[in-house]
Image (cartoon, rainbow, N blue to C red; front, side):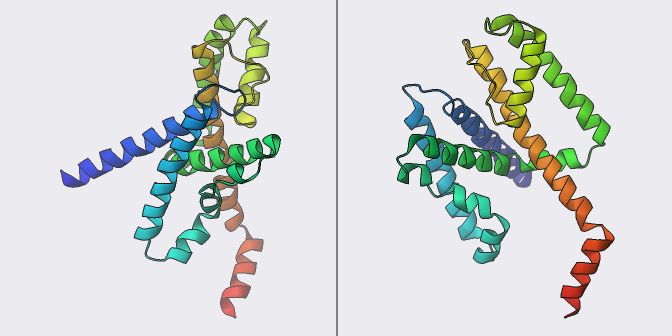
Length: 211
């Protein structure tokens, strides 16, 4: 019972952090009165979580080597640089790293599924979401425009090519963004696993291990 409770708590916490990161995504491409509050709240919780995981790690240096981008994300570089465009890029990279970090359980789950299943489920989800997106957003003239916006959001972390006017539109774009991060992580992880199994990689690995 205790183990199950801890697993449930961990899952809830990771979903909570994904939700915070998703909320922060909405602050990247447009300004609201709550941008700084959302951004710094997300970073503060993430930073405390990072310190806790680093403290609990058996090897501190091993943890840092395993999660280099998380270490970078923990440093508020966008607060140091005052140039707005550069700060936004740093903020974007930090959010993407945080989102990918907390979606790793989903990425590992998807890796165990058949490629066609993941591809089909992704296509169906995107297709179902672009229907209401096209209906509620006046700036989109057709389902083709909605489809293009979905692809852009999946690829460029929420940069959809238009400014959503409705709350539902914002939510759909955020869903596309989180889905894009998961797919990016899945593709990179799968590609890396494939390369590790190639004869060339194995021969290089053997040369170093034999020394």
